[in-house]
Length: 236
Ligand SMILES: C[S@@+](CC[C@H](N)C(=O)[O-])C[C@H]1O[C@@H](n2cnc3c(N)ncnc32)[C@H](O)[C@@H]1O
Image (cartoon, rainbow, N blue to C red; front, side, top):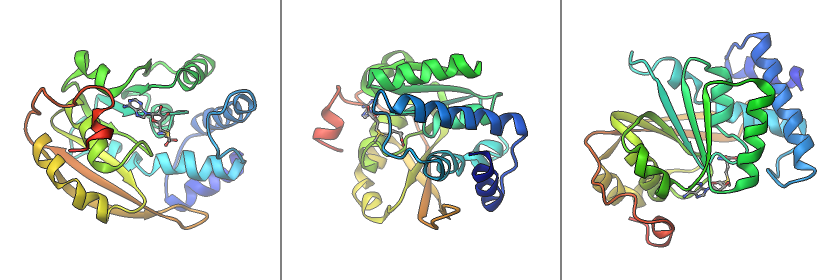
């Protein structure tokens, strides 16, 4: 696994120390082992885990390293699943606090075990929904991430309320044009503004990836997010 990881990191031009790479490999092997007992992810071969989970998550690393000269303290990952992108980024950035939430208990249990196994201190993991977790956590985070959870206008309603004014949602998408068009109303209601769209590629299969950098410009009305289930049922 480590050889594939080193190769992939080389292609995306990201340097990680040996210890961090070893931790990621333990993560990958633990995921493979646990996935035989509980279904955590459908991508489970070595190359798939490295490319589609780890490297895909690490496409966000450059934003965390240099965010407009501002120090990033807190990141939230909504619908983290088996830890993508939040757990991978937490391992690589021990100086930033990560909050990972997911509504499925078995995924949260897996992440708690992994946290223990690797001795990761900068991560808090909760079994909850974005629409409930917001109650104690409104406008607390510098950065929000959320991969493969729902269409853009839905995840905007999950993430933007968690952000401080001036914070950013780094939204990972494969295709984005139509979703962005449909998200115009949500961006206006939630006070989000797309400030940058970066196009990238995965290292081995060359698949396209896009990161939308969406800034929160003003505080968000407390009526958002609406109660659990409504953002998906009736998107803004
Ligand atoms: C397809 S998985 C993606 C997991 C991971 N982000 C990834 O990219 O591999 C979507 C996850 O989002 C979670 N989820 C969906 N809606 C949610 C919500 N409103 N609050 C918290 N978690 C949610 C689901 O439980 C599921 O684990």
